[in-house]
Length: 221
Image 1 (cartoon, rainbow, N blue to C red):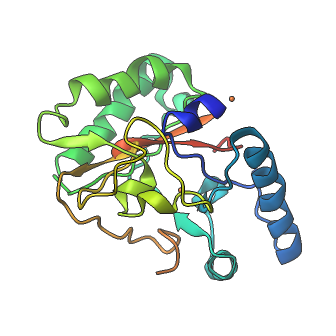
Image 2: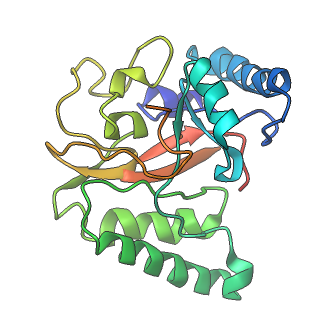
Protein backbone atom coordinates (compact mmCIF):
# COMPACT_ATOMS: atom_id res chain seq x y z
CA UNK A 1 0.00 0.00 0.00
CA UNK A 2 2.84 2.39 0.84
CA UNK A 3 4.50 1.73 -2.51
CA UNK A 4 1.25 2.30 -4.40
CA UNK A 5 0.56 5.49 -2.45
CA UNK A 6 4.02 6.93 -3.05
CA UNK A 7 3.73 6.26 -6.78
CA UNK A 8 0.55 8.29 -7.04
CA UNK A 9 -2.14 5.64 -6.67
CA UNK A 10 -5.17 6.87 -4.76
CA UNK A 11 -5.87 5.17 -1.46
CA UNK A 12 -9.55 5.38 -0.52
CA UNK A 13 -11.75 4.20 2.33
CA UNK A 14 -14.17 1.26 2.30
CA UNK A 15 -14.91 0.58 6.02
CA UNK A 16 -12.75 -1.69 8.14
CA UNK A 17 -15.08 -4.69 8.09
CA UNK A 18 -16.75 -4.28 4.68
CA UNK A 19 -20.03 -3.30 6.32
CA UNK A 20 -21.98 -0.10 6.92
CA UNK A 21 -23.66 -0.27 10.30
CA UNK A 22 -27.13 1.16 10.82
CA UNK A 23 -25.73 2.75 13.98
CA UNK A 24 -23.96 6.01 13.01
CA UNK A 25 -21.38 5.70 15.78
CA UNK A 26 -20.42 2.20 14.65
CA UNK A 27 -20.26 3.30 11.02
CA UNK A 28 -17.98 6.20 11.92
CA UNK A 29 -15.77 3.93 14.01
CA UNK A 30 -15.34 1.49 11.11
CA UNK A 31 -14.11 4.38 8.99
CA UNK A 32 -11.81 5.64 11.72
CA UNK A 33 -10.30 2.20 12.28
CA UNK A 34 -9.45 1.76 8.64
CA UNK A 35 -8.17 5.27 8.12
CA UNK A 36 -6.01 5.12 11.23
CA UNK A 37 -4.38 2.06 9.68
CA UNK A 38 -4.02 3.72 6.27
CA UNK A 39 -2.49 6.80 7.85
CA UNK A 40 0.00 4.72 9.84
CA UNK A 41 1.17 3.08 6.63
CA UNK A 42 1.03 5.97 4.16
CA UNK A 43 1.03 9.13 6.26
CA UNK A 44 -2.28 10.22 4.71
CA UNK A 45 -5.97 9.94 5.54
CA UNK A 46 -8.32 9.37 2.59
CA UNK A 47 -11.24 11.65 1.79
CA UNK A 48 -12.84 9.37 -0.80
CA UNK A 49 -15.12 6.48 0.08
CA UNK A 50 -16.68 3.63 -1.86
CA UNK A 51 -19.50 1.80 -0.12
CA UNK A 52 -19.25 -1.97 0.35
CA UNK A 53 -21.20 -3.58 -2.50
CA UNK A 54 -22.00 -0.07 -3.70
CA UNK A 55 -24.88 0.31 -1.24
CA UNK A 56 -25.18 3.65 0.52
CA UNK A 57 -28.72 4.93 1.02
CA UNK A 58 -29.79 8.49 1.83
CA UNK A 59 -28.95 8.31 5.55
CA UNK A 60 -25.54 6.86 4.75
CA UNK A 61 -24.92 9.60 2.19
CA UNK A 62 -25.99 12.30 4.62
CA UNK A 63 -23.61 11.00 7.27
CA UNK A 64 -20.68 10.85 4.86
CA UNK A 65 -21.45 14.35 3.69
CA UNK A 66 -21.53 15.66 7.25
CA UNK A 67 -18.17 13.96 7.86
CA UNK A 68 -16.71 15.64 4.76
CA UNK A 69 -16.20 12.48 2.70
CA UNK A 70 -16.47 12.28 -1.06
CA UNK A 71 -18.60 9.29 -1.97
CA UNK A 72 -18.03 7.55 -5.30
CA UNK A 73 -19.72 4.81 -7.25
CA UNK A 74 -18.65 2.93 -10.35
CA UNK A 75 -20.41 3.33 -13.67
CA UNK A 76 -19.49 -0.02 -15.17
CA UNK A 77 -19.37 -3.36 -13.34
CA UNK A 78 -17.72 -6.09 -15.48
CA UNK A 79 -18.51 -8.57 -12.69
CA UNK A 80 -14.95 -9.87 -12.82
CA UNK A 81 -15.58 -11.68 -9.53
CA UNK A 82 -18.61 -13.60 -10.84
CA UNK A 83 -16.89 -16.53 -12.56
CA UNK A 84 -19.47 -18.97 -11.22
CA UNK A 85 -22.15 -17.48 -13.47
CA UNK A 86 -19.83 -17.67 -16.46
CA UNK A 87 -18.96 -21.27 -15.72
CA UNK A 88 -15.21 -20.80 -15.76
CA UNK A 89 -12.60 -18.12 -15.19
CA UNK A 90 -11.72 -18.20 -18.89
CA UNK A 91 -15.31 -17.41 -19.86
CA UNK A 92 -15.48 -14.78 -17.13
CA UNK A 93 -12.67 -12.93 -18.88
CA UNK A 94 -14.60 -13.04 -22.16
CA UNK A 95 -17.84 -11.93 -20.49
CA UNK A 96 -16.20 -9.10 -18.54
CA UNK A 97 -14.38 -7.75 -21.58
CA UNK A 98 -17.66 -7.78 -23.51
CA UNK A 99 -19.31 -5.65 -20.82
CA UNK A 100 -16.41 -3.18 -20.94
CA UNK A 101 -16.46 -3.07 -24.75
CA UNK A 102 -20.15 -2.21 -24.72
CA UNK A 103 -19.47 0.62 -22.28
CA UNK A 104 -16.63 1.96 -24.41
CA UNK A 105 -18.90 2.02 -27.45
CA UNK A 106 -20.89 4.78 -25.74
CA UNK A 107 -17.85 7.07 -26.15
CA UNK A 108 -18.34 9.07 -22.96
CA UNK A 109 -15.85 11.60 -21.63
CA UNK A 110 -14.87 9.27 -18.82
CA UNK A 111 -15.44 5.79 -17.47
CA UNK A 112 -15.37 4.53 -13.91
CA UNK A 113 -14.98 0.75 -13.99
CA UNK A 114 -15.00 -1.58 -11.02
CA UNK A 115 -12.30 -4.28 -11.02
CA UNK A 116 -10.67 -6.42 -8.33
CA UNK A 117 -7.03 -7.37 -8.38
CA UNK A 118 -7.82 -10.11 -5.89
CA UNK A 119 -8.96 -11.98 -9.00
CA UNK A 120 -5.98 -13.38 -10.90
CA UNK A 121 -7.83 -13.36 -14.21
CA UNK A 122 -8.45 -9.64 -13.80
CA UNK A 123 -4.78 -8.92 -13.22
CA UNK A 124 -3.54 -11.29 -15.91
CA UNK A 125 -6.11 -10.69 -18.64
CA UNK A 126 -8.85 -8.08 -18.11
CA UNK A 127 -6.73 -5.14 -16.93
CA UNK A 128 -4.03 -5.74 -19.58
CA UNK A 129 -6.73 -5.85 -22.25
CA UNK A 130 -8.08 -2.48 -21.12
CA UNK A 131 -4.64 -0.92 -21.08
CA UNK A 132 -3.09 -2.44 -24.18
CA UNK A 133 -5.81 -3.79 -26.45
CA UNK A 134 -9.01 -1.80 -25.94
CA UNK A 135 -7.82 1.05 -28.15
CA UNK A 136 -8.83 3.67 -25.59
CA UNK A 137 -5.35 5.19 -25.30
CA UNK A 138 -5.28 5.62 -29.05
CA UNK A 139 -8.56 7.54 -28.80
CA UNK A 140 -6.97 10.06 -26.43
CA UNK A 141 -7.96 8.63 -23.06
CA UNK A 142 -5.50 8.25 -20.20
CA UNK A 143 -5.40 6.56 -16.83
CA UNK A 144 -5.65 8.72 -13.70
CA UNK A 145 -6.93 8.54 -10.14
CA UNK A 146 -10.63 8.88 -9.41
CA UNK A 147 -9.99 12.22 -7.74
CA UNK A 148 -8.23 13.60 -10.80
CA UNK A 149 -10.93 12.20 -13.05
CA UNK A 150 -13.41 14.26 -11.07
CA UNK A 151 -11.27 17.40 -11.21
CA UNK A 152 -10.23 17.03 -7.57
CA UNK A 153 -6.66 15.75 -7.74
CA UNK A 154 -5.52 17.58 -4.62
CA UNK A 155 -8.59 16.50 -2.66
CA UNK A 156 -7.91 12.78 -2.53
CA UNK A 157 -6.37 13.08 0.95
CA UNK A 158 -7.19 15.23 3.95
CA UNK A 159 -3.65 16.63 3.69
CA UNK A 160 -4.21 17.86 0.14
CA UNK A 161 -0.95 16.22 -0.93
CA UNK A 162 -0.36 14.46 -4.24
CA UNK A 163 2.34 11.97 -5.09
CA UNK A 164 4.06 10.34 -8.04
CA UNK A 165 6.10 11.74 -10.92
CA UNK A 166 3.80 14.69 -11.47
CA UNK A 167 3.09 15.42 -7.81
CA UNK A 168 4.38 18.99 -8.13
CA UNK A 169 2.37 19.69 -11.25
CA UNK A 170 -0.86 21.64 -10.65
CA UNK A 171 -4.07 20.01 -11.77
CA UNK A 172 -5.10 20.80 -15.35
CA UNK A 173 -8.51 20.93 -16.93
CA UNK A 174 -8.17 17.34 -18.06
CA UNK A 175 -9.88 14.80 -15.87
CA UNK A 176 -9.56 11.06 -15.38
CA UNK A 177 -8.97 8.27 -12.87
CA UNK A 178 -6.42 5.57 -12.39
CA UNK A 179 -9.52 3.70 -12.52
CA UNK A 180 -11.20 5.73 -15.11
CA UNK A 181 -10.74 7.30 -18.47
CA UNK A 182 -11.25 10.88 -19.49
CA UNK A 183 -10.18 12.73 -22.59
CA UNK A 184 -7.73 15.59 -22.16
CA UNK A 185 -9.58 18.81 -21.53
CA UNK A 186 -12.88 17.07 -20.86
CA UNK A 187 -15.12 18.10 -18.00
CA UNK A 188 -15.91 15.16 -15.70
CA UNK A 189 -19.48 13.93 -15.59
CA UNK A 190 -21.12 13.58 -12.18
CA UNK A 191 -22.12 10.00 -11.54
CA UNK A 192 -25.86 9.63 -11.77
CA UNK A 193 -26.52 6.82 -9.30
CA UNK A 194 -28.07 7.73 -5.95
CA UNK A 195 -24.85 6.91 -4.15
CA UNK A 196 -22.44 8.46 -6.62
CA UNK A 197 -19.79 11.13 -6.09
CA UNK A 198 -20.13 12.86 -2.71
CA UNK A 199 -23.30 14.66 -2.07
CA UNK A 200 -22.72 17.63 -4.35
CA UNK A 201 -14.47 5.78 -4.47
CA UNK A 202 -1.66 -5.24 0.25
CA UNK A 203 -5.41 -4.69 -1.83
CA UNK A 204 -5.93 -2.54 -4.84
CA UNK A 205 -9.23 -1.63 -6.45
CA UNK A 206 -8.68 -0.62 -10.06
CA UNK A 207 -11.38 1.59 -11.51
CA UNK A 208 -11.36 2.98 -14.98
CA UNK A 209 -12.28 6.67 -15.33
CA UNK A 210 -10.03 6.66 -17.96
CA UNK A 211 -7.36 5.82 -15.87
CA UNK A 212 -7.18 3.31 -13.06
CA UNK A 213 -7.91 4.48 -9.56
CA UNK A 214 -6.08 2.11 -7.45
CA UNK A 215 -7.66 2.33 -4.06
CA UNK A 216 -6.52 0.38 -1.08
CA UNK A 217 -9.69 -0.98 0.39
CA UNK A 218 -10.69 -3.76 2.68
CA UNK A 219 -13.25 -5.08 0.26
CA UNK A 220 -14.55 -8.18 -1.28
CA UNK A 221 -17.63 -7.33 -3.26
